[in-house]
Image (cartoon, rainbow, N blue to C red):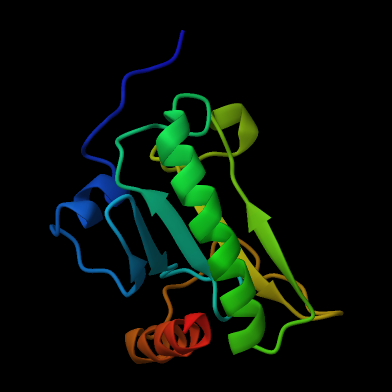
Length: 141
């Protein structure tokens, strides 16, 4: 049995404006923000505005919107960070590695031979996150 959506999760609170975030992209269905504990510079999180725990309970229309924006952001972070590749990850349920129970996709630019920062990761400098967000927004144009 799937648990009910908990609207006190950090992404629901960001969507309501209760917690600040470095926004990279927003439309009627989707929000993309800089990960405050990035695995690599340019790490973006893409979340639907629809309240859903993960990919298993997300309505198809919201899922279609988020995957299109995730792909656009993957191209943008690759361009902005002159990356060799991009990791796109999504974890569903505790056994699948999910820690925050609001659907989100990780979009991480990757360089050959560079490893992701290990967990637990420290919070990034907010000025740096703002600069990285601007770089990604410019690359989306």
